[in-house]
Length: 451
Image 1 (cartoon, helix red, strand yellow):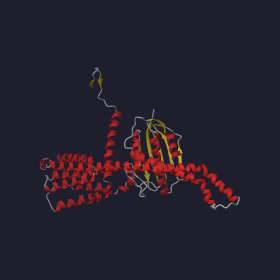
Image 2 (cartoon, helix red, strand yellow):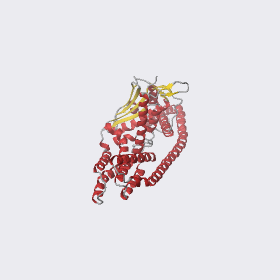
Image 3 (cartoon, one colour):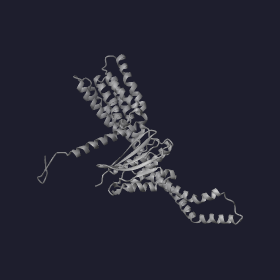
Image 4 (cartoon, helix red, strand yellow):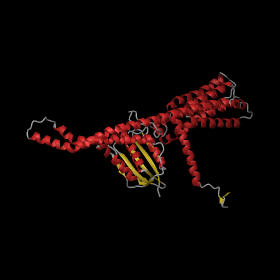
């Protein structure tokens, strides 16, 4: 119990809800670290898996038969090899387990490099060959993870290696040498962190330059698009009269240049198509600029809005390229609920999900996009389902990362779904996805209830 200034006593008891929220915050932080780590190493997952599978058992026989007398542990090595074997076979994991891949990868790297090599070096009295092995593992870790995870993994893994060494050893023979070499390890750690951080800064500067160029290009594109739309609107007022005059002249047998009837019929709708295409182009420009330009969302002006109204507005405003695209969307708004946020941002979230679903429905030959609202206890849901081509299981953990795209046709920017995640988290909610390749994809948007 603590005594306040007014004489009242403040209880040190932490409510269960506060403890739960604290645990959830820690889990979310660890998830971000794990996803950041696996995203950074994505291109090297398969090569590093082969290195772990082959290297762990191979060097057991190298040290046992070429330099006998060292401490070795086949169980630890086979455990490390099995970790990397599972990562190599990640595409065959059950669907329910795919969300745990970042955590599993994080543990595998931490175990295989800082923990294992620190423990083995200490158990072998820090002989030169294990000093070099430990340093090589540190440099591999520098290449494999970003600067923040590099620091965390090295410190945590090394500490766990020391704990395991102390728990299994009576006479500490290699500890003194390890302490003497800490300056070298910390130099490599700091140098690697600086280089990795510098790489992150350069990538951020590239992103800012790209955004600036995108804004200029968008501005230059809007001007001619506006001119085209204005011209089409003006022609729409007079073209029907000109077509009618042509029909009358042709009926009276006047010497007018003949136009095929199909072309004449097309003139009645061409202006509407021009206006629709310019509206579509402007909407896409708006989406790209909003997706790319938002990294932080101001929540001070959030208000309560109807989810069904925002969804309906998004569907009405989206520039579908055909009536078939519009017809495959099915809305179930019978369980409307309110959310606290910005309705314009939610409209653009729906824009991104519609665009994404239309792409995969067309690729997979699907026939339906179903948007459904559901109320729950403590939270509400917006389900966005399509029966399109589905998303490969191995890329599901990364689709909400900024600039990540699986669109091999070059039409994706990798910013849409990351923008959706940013918006939903600013609302106090979340967005998740489940998918089966060749069958379906469902995005689930979670909103906290509004009293």
